[in-house]
Image (cartoon, rainbow, N blue to C red; front, side, top):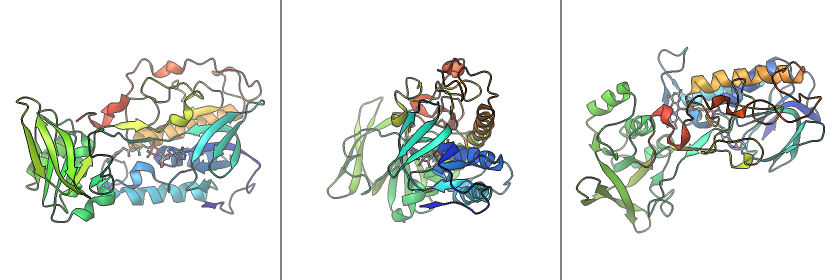
Length: 359
Ligand SMILES: Cc1cc2nc3c(=O)[nH]c(=O)nc-3n(C[C@H](O)[C@H](O)[C@H](O)COP(=O)(O)OP(=O)(O)OC[C@H]3O[C@@H](n4cnc5c(N)ncnc54)[C@H](O)[C@@H]3O)c2cc1C
């Protein structure tokens, strides 16, 4: 799916000024800034625009919406804003590789075509981490889910399990409680890591039931989920709990497999940048959840998207003096990719959202 709005000054160029990988809040903000700066901008998205934000039921902490806003609505507004300045949004287009050209420009290889661009902004976000327990893969889509917003309505008046103790587990558990008769939250510790306000709401909800110090060992069923076996980590007892659905919220992994060997990544696969969001490759910048940084929130992805776009402008104008080998020189980056080394990367635990891995 592709569209170019007529307001774009140059139509569809052979070589874009900037290609943006991923149309979550980070990528869409970068697209707003780049296209508004009259850069020929293409935004490549493997699904539909919005990223994780689009499947978040309600967002209460993004400034400007005191009553909160649905993730879908906020996504649509950002998409509209990027489009109105002429960004070329290509949905259902998966980026598979990045090839650096001899002149320092880039070819972004998608499942459909090769897109030439003078600079690239990486904003591929993260995806849900799998726990790897028996039954998890087998019952995927048949009772096992990673998205309450997508699948919650299927569990009206049924009992479900949420695995995890962070923000996602609690917020999504509360969403499930609108449908399910009981939401059992199984957490390996004796207290939650979610924000206090979310905890207070969850504890006050009679449909929420907490099972502490426990880990899921197995998902049981014939053709669909029928129960989970969980083990108390203190007394080692195993209990079988009959449920219809199991929702995993045990951390996240960055969508950066395609970037291995292209830009420097940290030990957990997050993209390393300096404070100007420059990666280890000249002309390639990164923003949002996939970048090694402390905060994984929409407000942060939006701020980084703006910064990455402004840095691209400077780079294309030959004013990015901090980076050796600008667009003309095409040399290797002299920046320290470990500009984030002074801060602890969020790692697979998605710590900034309090989402615990291995729950
Ligand atoms: C359950 C849950 C609830 C949340 N609630 C809140 C909240 O209330 N408030 C808040 O501030 N934050 C919340 N967050 C965090 C917030 O959603 C993220 O911080 C934000 O979406 C990150 O934006 P992003 O643009 O970096 O990445 P994403 O939103 O993940 O977007 C990345 C995009 O890149 C695309 N992509 C990935 N790989 C490729 C590829 N190879 N080719 C093309 N496209 C690709 C993906 O499909 C995706 O659309 C929540 C997160 C979760 C999991």
